[in-house]
Image (tube, rainbow over all chains, first blue to last red; front, side, top):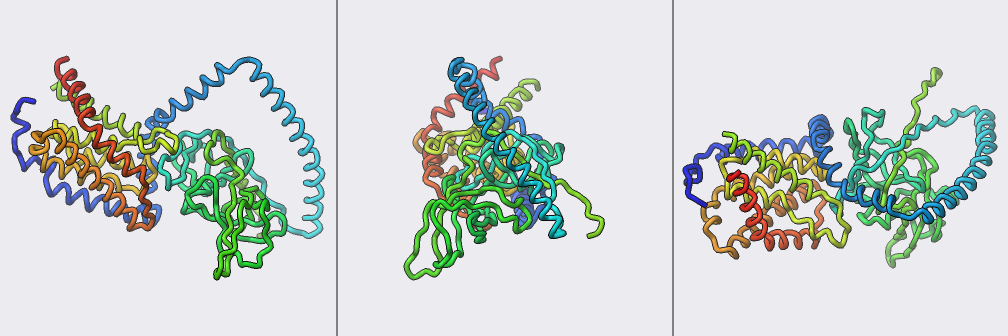
Length: 285
Length: 161
């Protein structure tokens, strides 16, 4: 490379001055502090994330194109068999729904007997995945519905089988979901069989979440289904979360070490359901 | 002036492309292939065309990277502007180094970048050292000669056009 004038030794280039690095140090430390302390930088982040949305979409485009190609190239026969399977499943699901009408009516009648407040209705919104965080210790995904579509912070996310996580940052056109397997995530659950309550904590593995603080004499068995308990107010009550996969008694420890396998397929999420409360006013309360 | 503009747009095109590459979905066993492209391209541009890029550009691309990766805001901008600064201070030496010393200095710069990340993440209380990250840094410094050759080729094409 020729030796040009703008490549000469010039320690006073203002683009690289020591003053500027100090300024950037102060600026970014302040930003990190604000971001860590609370949600002071949410607005900046949401503007930036609108700007970088095309990059996220582009990065996930190859995967989507391959999936589309797979769909297009798969032969007619396999599509037909899949269609038949889905039809069968649909019929089964409909027959289950028929029973729920009766249960719903019964439930309502019982609530009226108890003079209790009926449960709020739920609003379901479908969303697609835009991108999946590639860091192994950050289990986050980004979905294509944001505050423009009426998504609120803290809404629960599920797939067709069970709970996936909740929205922890809402942006304008997209929102970020923290998965239940993230090391920073805990979800209040209860065992469907006997209502024993606990908190399931992610450990950064897609196949396992753990239950801490259950004493050695707890009534818990392998293959128990864990459902959301509705405590804490973030997750709606009664959605399946995980199945107990191993229980271990640690010698000298008064608590069991329990592992559970999430029911939702966290590794390969395609479409998700956002579960939101429909806000109703109760004039008497 | 228009050649300046085309050079500048080339730099930003490469930076955006590398940020895209750094979030592209890969299966877990291939995650060491996620080479730190943004530090690599920043080092390259700081060595070769320091007048076209600066600390604030590094800071901005760091912010974009933070938003893309869902990290704490300001983490990457701090790390990237630091390595840009160090690269600028030593760019004349690095430019005339033989290739293996160049690779070594790139490796050290990438390690500094990663150390900054670990330091910041350690302060906020979630420190995870993964082998695949170290492997990707090693891979990044190993492919540096090829990367540099490719970029120089592209840049010379931009200039002659």
